[in-house]
Image (cartoon, rainbow, N blue to C red; front, side, top):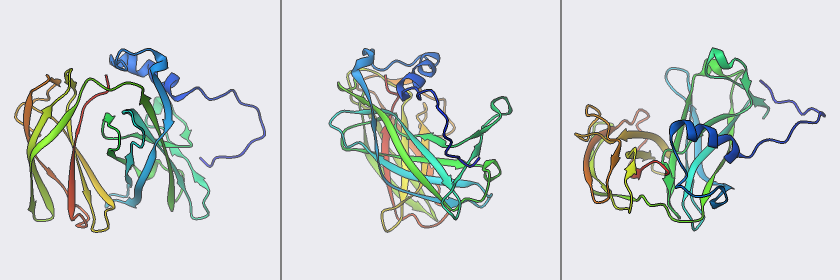
Length: 253
């Protein structure tokens, strides 16, 4: 759907936090048990992104955001406006028939559940090209998230990292360490591949498992002081990846 500028009055758009809270409640997530005033919706810096078509005709948007604030960020959302060759917005079909209609923006969450101050998080969105209402030439991106006034109780590091080239792909082995004061819920390892110019090309996520591979059973949490080895592969379909970064992730609580 092409977005039209209409001279009609509309009710004010609810704040992002207001829209997000009911979904978090359904998922059983809290925001660290803090009162509503302890979080502030803020714009988030997008440091790079690119858009390309995949071999199956889908649109892939991949990029990276940075936390430029002195506090952690949670629930960082990237809004994507597809545009045609003339720079006009191109709409996107909603995901299910029950939600029939067209959206002006596509959306995706940053890969890391919590982004510490000064750190980055990849993001990736793959959209079926048949769900986009016209030819796409470019995309305009903005991001926002929740800045927490206090520190999160969870924390994690990656140690013993080994990156081994296997053909075009990269085998990643290392250890996820829960280093905070509270359990890390839904621990994950995020891998991002970059080209020689430092532009992000591909993102892969491993939900930590009891054997550290895709074949294991997912771990719901890691307690403070616990460690979990991991071993998985980052695919390099374009062949452009020359360097890899690995990030720890866990749910914002």
